[in-house]
Image (cartoon, rainbow, N blue to C red; front, top):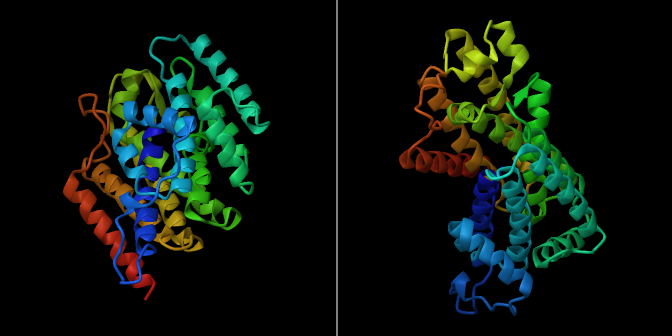
Length: 330
């Protein structure tokens, strides 16, 4: 989930930063460098979150500098909450029972944030974000915790496609909803597209990460679809990439493409440069689907690595996105 937040927030930063620079022209028509815009006084909340970013995601810290002060503060508050939630779930030194208790405590802590009773500076930053964006529902935060709780078990499996999509919403669709205020979007109008985009990204990441996930004893492909093709969980854990297994991978990939298309159609609900933001992500993740098809949907025999695309493919996907948005807005 954290990698998704980094991707989305970095692109949001670039997009909003571009828009902000265009609005900072002086009387002579010169565009002022965004890094030189007046800074508000640094608060304890800002310093705490900046240290967290500096430790874990320095590139994201740099990208956040492209934002105006208030947007950067809101984006950073969201990042800090999601990042610390990830750390609880993925703590290699904790057993399942400990992680589950810490997640329960984190849920109680979020209730305190909602009551404006923050425990620390980073909690206080999120409380201020929620107050400034009172149209943002609180359910995405609770739903994300639920998704993390579902992951905090040994030998993680998914029963069916409905459960997989619910999980994809919990850990990724929620991120899309959280970020809508940063895009100045109408939350109600853009809700479905934001959820579709997040779910698509998560499904594709599950297909990309199948090889490293089996090392952790995790099989996210729906069990009923695997059984229908005569594939057992043990087969997957033993990396038996049979034609039947690859058929299931292809079916999940098809569903991910349908969700990408839904997000692509719904991008028009976003104001300003929001449609470009969505189209870039759609095209990038379509490239992963193309890569999966090229390797015959064999995502298990990658020596423990995830499915990747190269920098040129990423660049071409971004150019394709820009062209599509330009042509549709003519």
